[in-house]
Structures are given as structure tokens and as C-alpha cells.
Image (tube, rainbow, N blue to C red; front, side):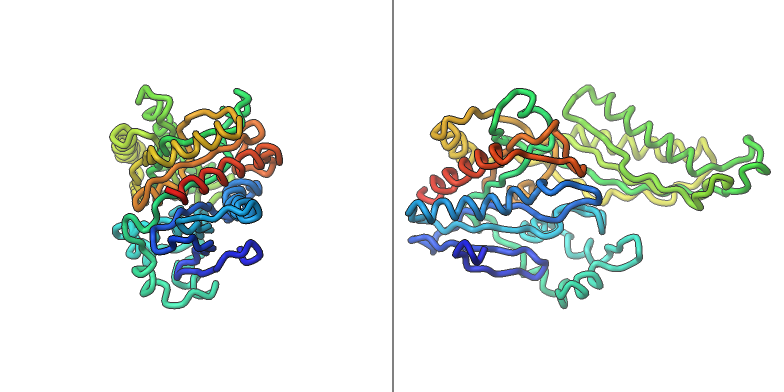
Length: 371
């Protein structure tokens, strides 16, 4: 950011901002950006393209002699991926001032029983809870926000389209479920007398799939991404099971109906399998977001000006843009990625496609900054 001539600041949760002052810098700025953190065994394009791409877009505008009216700001959001504390988009949630967010973080611990506050202190952020309230931005703090990102799906590559422009973002409900049984020796306890927490968890994972498919919509998806058994020995009946479940949709009511059915199944399975449902926690249940028409229009006009074919589309993955939509009109620019692979080591986007996305972003930022 500094090498691109931006003035840099950082807030209490770790979001980093780089600003190019416009000639009318008292007006609300235009922002762009993404994240650079990743899940385990992931690739290097998810999020990073949107941070480096935004910086490069500003480099291009500066070198071309463009003079912005509204200031342009690049945001590198902290902790977008929910891998450590089970809650994603920490930086953008904080900026959006999500209700109850600080209280959730006060209770958050990782798998090693390290609290969020301890982790923040280790990383150099002190008194983070006390300062988080000041991170939140008022609605309208930015005039617009636009995020460049790889698609993380196969549509653009399959259709040979270089640019996707996002009109809506599906939102997840994240669940944590815990069962407890009696356990016992795998040979000594006969089948009729077992209280197997592992089988209860397996049945619930299948129930998630069943309820998602029963919604009747391709936009409804569900994933049991974590299933842990204790004690985790081949000759020991599981006496504890921990699941983490992700359910998403662009229709909030339909998604929440699936969540309710999963909760009903979790209780029913516990009764039928004679185990205890220790916890059924809805970690978050965020509403989907729709893009701002004026931001989408600016991106469409930029793609047309560049002669790049584009496609209006929905984002099935969620992003920091989901929370930025609570304070400003937003949109996203997608570029194709190899076979739609993401959250994998072989995640890849070509230089040509990234360059196309950066060009669309640069022209979009220019247009919005003059509005």
C-alpha cells in the first residue's frame, strides 16, 4: 500500500486501510479490498487477488494520470476465514457493527482453549474488546464498496466468460452440535446396549443432506465440514461427537427452515439412539445480501468499455462484501478459477483473467469516484 502511494492505517481488530485522497476528500470514499488469510491446505488466490488487485487498480489509475474526486480506499480485512474461532469475517463484521459481535468474541475460544482476547494480545492487539466498539462504521461511511475475487465455482470457466458481476451473496448459518454417549469396549459391549455418539453424529450429517435436498432449490446447500469423535480409537465406541455444519441459501427463510429441521432431527436422533444432545449452538445466522444497483451498473459499464464479456451471477460463497452491504451499496467482480477449485492447494486463476478483473475494477473505481 505504501509503495502505491497510499496513506496507511490499522484499526483495533487488524483491518488495514490504504487511502488515496481525492480532490473532494470530505465526501464519502469508494472502497475495495478483500482478505489474505486462508483455511488449512488452501490455495493462494482466494481473497489475495482482491487485496493485491485493488492496490494494482489504484497503481494503474495513478500512472494513467487519473484524478479521483471521492477518495479511494483499499481494505485488507482481518480473519475472513472462520478457521480458528468458528466465526468468519471478523474484520468486516466489526466494521458493520454487528449486534452482539463483541459479546460473541469475548466468549470465543479455539481448539486449544485460547481465547480471542489472548490470541489478539499475542498478535499485538491490546485491550481489543474495549476498543472494538470504536471500529464500527456508521451506515453510509463509504459511498460504495466493490470486491474483486476468484469465483470459487466452475461457471465462468465452463462458459468461457472472463468476468462475473455479483448481484447477490448467499449467507451461511453455522452450527455446532455435540452428542454424548456411554462409550465402552468395541468387543465387550453388545449392539443392543450401545449408546454410540458417533452413529448419532453420522445420522445427523445424513439428515442435513436430506433436509437440504428437500428444500427443492439448488440454491440451498449444506455441509458437515467437521465431525470429530472421542476417544477416537478403533476399539472404543465413540462416547462424544462434535459436528460443525454450514447451511447456506440466498433465501433467508428457506435456509432458516432447514436449520430448524436439522435441530429437530438432532433432538430426535438423540432420543432414538439413547445419547445426550449436549449442545446445539447456532454460531451465526447471517442474512443474505443484495448488491447495490449503481455499483453493479458501474461494473457492467466498465466490462463493456473494455470489451470483456460478463455475466450477472450470484455468489454461493460468502465474503466480506456481505457485511459491507450493511453500511454501503456493494458489488463484486468475479474472475474464473481453474475447474472452480477453491479451498484446495491446486486453486488457480490465470494472469490473463486476473488482469481482466483488475482492469474492470480500476474503471469501476474511477467511475464511482467521479459520482
